[in-house]
Image 1 (cartoon, rainbow, N blue to C red):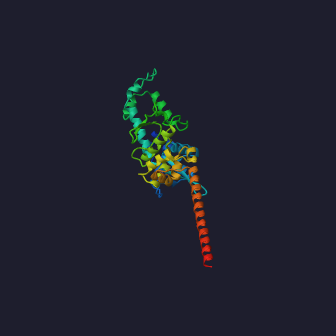
Image 2 (spheres, rainbow, N blue to C red):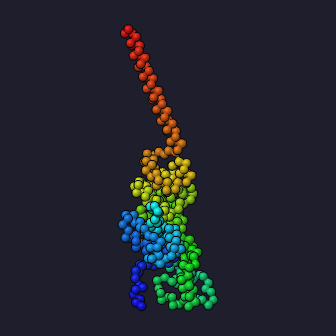
Image 3 (cartoon, rainbow, N blue to C red):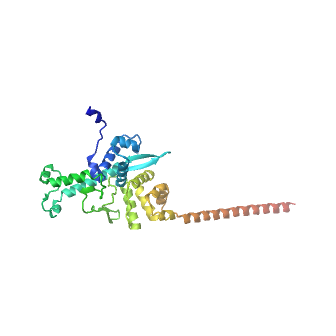
Length: 332
């Protein structure tokens, strides 16, 4: 038997993706998705991959694929879209969101490693002494860990995929929730955004427009809007349609001024901001807005004016005819 025959088609597995809390299967699928996204001929990075192809390339079975996809979509790192008849499932990697999540995960790891005093305050169990220094950046320190601790750690790693993760970041998740982000609005007001909301970073394409929308939304509804892969895609398309400079102003107008019944009932979602982007742009530029009732009133007013003008025209024509008939009588 030639072992080389069984060692074909290796996959470039990105170990850093595991730290995003998507598990090994999610990291494996994301690694392969990044590979194909970089080779996509679609200008927006979409690529098609069937369930069978995923299994052939990664070894992930249907249930594992579905679990990995749900985690990646929830994270915002990957997007899905069904196209055509019969429908085919296309995928795209959201590289901006992926970068933001990697930076967040790295910051969390650095924070854990930078404050060993917290761990040293915990009372160690008898018979299992632990070092007060976090397990960060120095593999030699691991020799101080007892064999029992090694076994426990290895077991938790190898069984993490067979027993569903109970926390988004797995066993290494910090005990405390992420610290809130601070954002200063143009008027000087400082807003604290909950740390669990993965909003885009300042250097991203959607940051300014999204923050304008999110703050106005918070002021109106006293709740922060949800940011996910679907919303990120909609916001990016909205910016493409109205322009990056106008997008924040239009987003503020949409949430603050638009009072159309359907929009209000839906609580000003981003999908409706995108659906009528040019309309909201015109309203924001002219400083006007129009509800459905106002539009009906405008139609009625315009109809009344047309009727008045028509009546005036007919009156002028009748007067002209009478004048003509009167002139003919005098000539006789």
